[in-house]
Every structure is written in structure tokens, then in C-alpha cells.
Image (cartoon, rainbow, N blue to C red; front, side, top):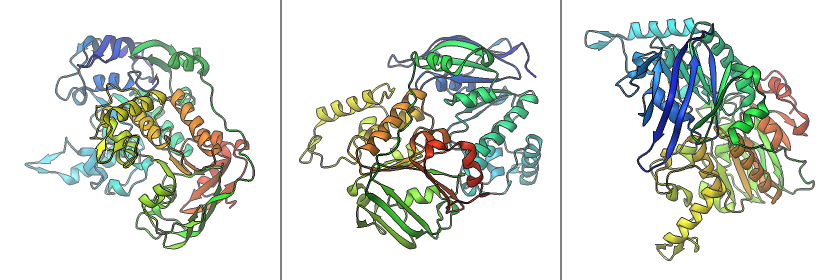
Length: 509
């Protein structure tokens, strides 16, 4: 039950980095005990910086953070753990080869003498799972779990130290509608148990469905903190962006687009079921956007891997623009005109340890505009990259900084700027707007639509069904590696209509 007393209060909290970048400016608001409090703002608004300060990952430059009414030293060692603050990051921090138990107890292992008491650790995790109704197999290795199951592990890990304040950063980014609803049921139960939840999200319908109160940040400053019952979605959007945003809805695809991509009875035989496909036949024409829906692990990853040269079929045939591509490498697909927005912008889309410049020009070897013989045209490259980041509104401190210094949303915009800079003939957009604010998502949607209208074939894979139905001309639903539905006229569909197909309860292939 919500208390009138704040568990946390920010009083004129500011953060200025050594290069002069102001990430937060006099942020002032409080969070009530036992509430679900949403934080909204565009990429670079200061949300992540504020949460890192609260979690003890970064010091603030001025102001103070109050915990239970008393000034707190958030930079003190293990501040979060000692004060019952847990955090689930947008990009999971689990150790893939370890088991569920090993991940949850990591850093605070129960011991018997000098040795880890594995039996007691397992019992603690089972009890924790039962207590919060977050059921996961304790002995399963993380690498074998679905994204939804991994998220449960992340939440259990955050709750394992008597947590009373839980921070969730874009927790629904790659979940299907049934998984999102299950998560929300669990979060409401945690709130009812007295745990305060901070919910960071760009999805206003989810904020409204879950939270009691919303704080809006813009350009490092708090615009307002309001009960959600007193503010409309349009008003929140205006506060977030400082202006109205037109939501892109694609008009019907021009008719008569010639087939560009053709898969005939394609199958893969892989150990990982997320890559396994059975008897997939699919054609995507020029000017067409085909959306792929499905619960995580239904074969989407295998399909994307096939069409980007990372996986080859065991049976069937793949043709692109009339050319056989069954054994094509990633380089072959690139030469044929592939542009790829991968689901993981840090491990697949770019190289975290390299600069924005290096990541922005990756794949342009031999381009005479940027290279003279063996020598790079450094001035031309800097002008090119600066133009890219301006066009895609990437927030950064300098184009020579590392990619992993950017927020996930800004890293995604940089990768999108690079991939869409040419004239692709095939675009794979895999979770293209995950973690991206409303304006950036609308901009990317318009660019994806423009790529299709230029004559390309587009494969759109997304867990955001609203995005899918706004952009796709038709929808393919995958379940257990098979196509169970091929639905035309995506604009006439609803997320609820897709649910039974995604769960394998109906078939209309």
C-alpha cells in the first residue's frame, strides 16, 4: 500500500561530466513508499544517469539524495546492497554459462567454512522464487533460458538481498504481450508486498497500465511529477519531447512489387531451439514490409541468422533477386544489398570498445569518399559522421568517445544511421526501436517505410506489436520454428488477434 512518506527524495541533484556535458540539472522530486513510480524521457534526458546515481554506480556533482528522510552517501561501497536497492538493467548482466542459482547468489554466496554452501544456496533460491511467484528452474544454465525466463532471474537476483526499492530499466523491451502481462502481475504483487518500484519506459500505454505516478525528464531537468490519473498520454508526450509528435502509420504498400526474397521449404537443424526452423516458405516483394511476430524463441533468431549469412539451411532453398543464397556468407549478403539493424546493438551492431567514428564507418572499406588508396580521408570521415549523428539526433559527448559510453537507445540510432546511409535492397530490422524514445522511434519508422518505398524488401522482427501493426503490410506468425499464420492487411489486425497464433493455440498458415 502506498505511503505518504517518500522512500527517496532527490533535491537539486546535478551531474556534470569532466568535459562539461550536463546530464542532470537540479533534479528535484520524490518517490513514495510502496508505489510504482514511472520515469519517462527521451534518450539522453538523464533517466539512466539518475538511476546510476541512486544505485551507487556514479557520484552526483551537487545536490543531495535523501533515503528515508536522511541524506545518503550513494557513492559509499555497496550502498545499494546495504540499503535494499535492486536494479534490473535493460541489457541483462547475467553470466550465461552459470546456472540460475549461481547467478542469483553471485557476490553474496552462503558459506560453510571457506566453501560455498551450494545446498543452502539452492534452497534460498527456491524459497525466493516461491515467495515472489517467479518460477524458474534453479539448475538451468542461463544460456538455455528464454529472454522472459532470464528476466525473471534478473528480478530474483535484484530481490535476493531484502530489496525494498526495485529499479526496472525498459523491462518489457523484448517480451511478448502474454509475458508482459505476467510481468505486470508480478510487479503489482511486489508493490502490494510493500516494495517500491521505479519503472523506466518509453511505452506510455505500459506506464499507464502499471504505474501510479510519473516523473518526466527532458534535457536533464525534471519537467513535472504527476499522478497518472491527472495527465493524458498526449500531455506526457508533449512534456517528454517539448512538442507534439506525429506517430507514423504506413499506408498500403504499392501493388505489384516483384518478389525479391524467396524461401522455399527451408529448415535448420540446430541444437538451440531458438534457431530451429521447419519447412519455412516465405516471399517478400519489392516495396513490401513483412512483420514477424512470435513469442521469444519461436524461430525469429534463426530466420534473421539465415538471411544475414550467420546460419545456413539444412534443407530448402533461399533466393534473393534471382540469385541462390543457400550458402551465402555475411559478406555475400552485404554485397547483395543487405542492411541489418540487429537486436543487440552492442554485441552485433557495433564494437563497444571502439569510437563512434569507427563504428559509424564500419563496412565502408574502399569507399573513395572516405579513403584515398590506403589512406583514410579523416576530415571527410569526421564530416560524414557528424552529419549522420545530427540527422539521427544521437546524443553524445564527442564522436571520438567509445560506443559503450552511449545509452542503448543512442547506440541503436548510430547503428541505424550507418545501416540506412546507403540504398539497401533488403533490410532486416530486428527490434529496431527497443529502448528508443517516441520521437526517435517515429523517425526510424519513417526511414524504414522510406527504404521499402524505394524498392527494397523489408523484414521487420519486433516484440512491440503496436509497432508491427503500424509498419507491416502483412504479418507472419512463428511458433516452434514453423509459420502458423500468414496474415494480410496488418492494419486491420489487433495485438489481441495475434495472441492465439503466438501461443500456438490457432493456425492459419
